Image 1 (cartoon, rainbow, N blue to C red):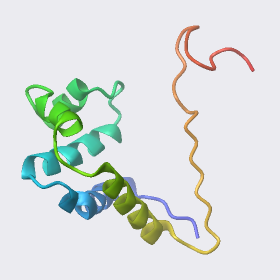
Image 2: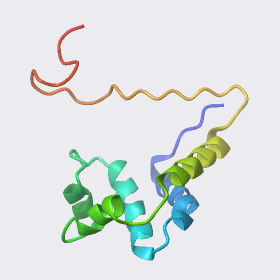
Image 3: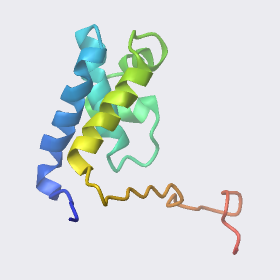
Image 4: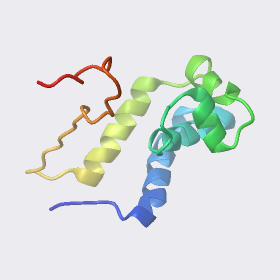
Length: 118
């Protein structure tokens, strides 16, 4: 079974994933900001900084994004476990294999890691 996401249906899936971890954030602001942060990370924003993600989310400054990462109270391990459990429910199959390839970053100039011919 091969499962893919209809480009028009990604919002439903993202909302489901964010809802799954929402209880890990005690206050409403970090809960909302976490969803915006994840959406920004999955977006086509070229540089994923707190400033660029905040601008994409409609914030005037990066304070909410920075607060989420620096001082907001939430359990990163519990969020990871919730996301893992959700992914297993969505993608789990006895014969399934999940392949993650993190080598697809854009190489610019001569200083990027791996830019030289191998």
